[in-house]
Amino acid sequence: MVVIMKPGTKKEDVNSVVTYVKGMGLDVVLNQGINYTVLGLIGDTGKIDPDKLMLNEHVDRVMRIAEPFKKASRKFHPENTVVKVGDAEIGRDKGFTVIAGPCSVESEAQMTEVANGVKKSGAKLLRGGAYKPRTSPYSFQGLALEGLEILKEAREQTGLPIVTEIMSPALVERFERDVDVIQVGARNMQNFDLLKELGKCSKPILLKRGLSATIEEWLMSAEYILAGGNENVILCERGIRTFETYTRNTLDLSAIPAVKKLSHLPVIVDPSHSAGMSWMVEPLSLAAMAVGADGLIIEVHNCPEKALCDGAQSLNLAQFDSLMKKMTGMGRNIGLNI
Ligand code: PEP
Ligand code: MN
Image (cartoon, rainbow, N blue to C red):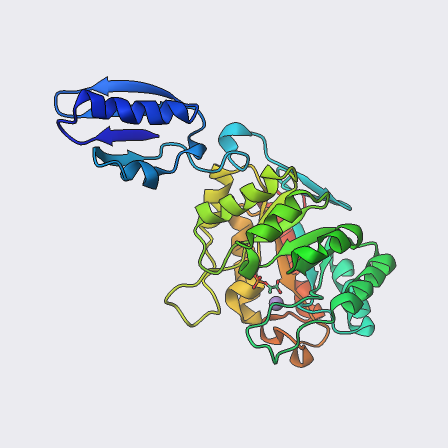
C-alpha cells in the first residue's frame, strides 16, 4: 500500500502517519520528493483501512498495490487447487467435470430418472436443490429435509456425489454430514456468517458469483471460507446483472481467464442460470470449455415443461446426452482428458 501526503506536509505531520502505521505492526519506507512525500507500507496491509488513513487531513491519496485476498491468490499459491469428489478432480489440468441435475428435487421418481440419465451421459456429480432461494415467497420453496433424503437415495442408487444449496448457517452440520459438495447460491455469496461457518466445514464448497458481484468481491467471499481453514472451494460463474434483458443474466466469460490468473481455485460455469433459456445452454457450455473453465453445472429435468422451478432453462435427458457428446468431441480436439 502506498500513502501519498499532500504537497508541503510538515515533517511532524508525516511522522504522525508513520507512527500510526508502525503502531499497526507495519514497516514504512519513506520517499521524500521535492513536493510530495510518499510512504510505502510493508507488511500485512490487510489490517489497514485506507478510508481511515484518508481521514488524516495531510493525506492526499492511498493506493492498494496487492489484492486484498491472500489465501485465494495465485501469488501465494501458484499451483492449481484440485478439489477431489468421488471420481472427479475439479481443477485438474486438462480435466473437465460436469455436474448435472434438476433445479429442485421434486420427488423420488424424478430424481431416480434424472440421476440415472445424467450418469449414463457422463455427469460426474448430481445436483438438486432441496432449499430453494425464490424471489417470491409463494413459489415452490423446495422439499427441505425430505429433498435431502431423496438426494441421498439417488446417490445410493447411482454412486454420484451430490451437490445441493445451503441457505442457513443453522444447517451446516447437517449438510456436512449428508452432502458431498455444499453450494452457496448467488444470493448468499455475501452471507458472511454462512461463509464463516462453511470455513470450519470439511466438505468442498461450490461458491457461486453474486448477482452483481465484482470478481474481487467474489474472491473475497472465497477468502472467508479459506481463512476459516476449508481449502476446498470451487468457484462458479453463473451470469451477472447487466442492462441486457434478453437473457436472464449475462454470462461473464471473461471472468474465467481472469479468475484463473488471479486465483488457484477451480472455476466452473453455470450456463443454465446465465441464459435462462434451454436452447442457449449448448453454445454457452462449449464457450465455457473453450475459455478454460474446469467444468459446468447444468440443469437437467426429466420433463422440463412440468418442472416446479427453472423448467425453461432445463435440458431434457436427450438434450443433455447430445450436449455431452458434443463436449466430449470438442474437449478431445482442444486437448482435454474428457
Ligand atoms: C440454482 O443453482 O438453482 C440457483 C438458485 O442458482 P443461483 O444461486 O446461481 O441463482
Ligand atoms: Mn435453478
